[in-house]
Length: 81
Image (cartoon, rainbow, N blue to C red; front, side, top):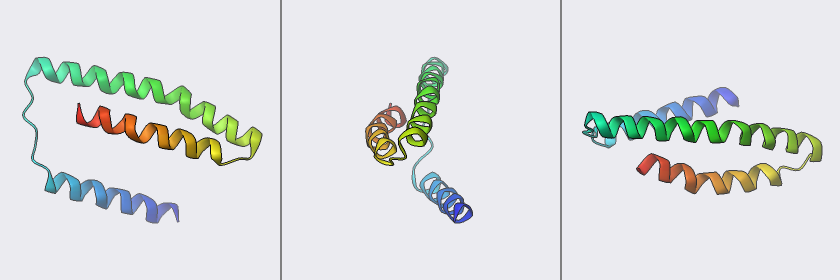
C-alpha cells in the first residue's frame, strides 16, 4: 500500500513537472524563495511531531485530518509564492 502511494505521488510530481513551464527566477528572488521554503519546513516539523503524539495519545484520526485540511491551503500558498 505504501509503495503504491509513493509510486502514485512520484508519477503525479513527474506529470506536473512536465505540464508546468520552468519558472524564471532571478538570484535575489531565488534567495527569498529559499528562505520561505526553509521556514515552511521548520514550521511543519514540530507540527508533525505534535500531530503524531496527539494521534497516539488520543487514538483519534480527527487530529490529523484537521491539521491536514489546515495545511493544504498553507502549502498551496507556499508553493504559489
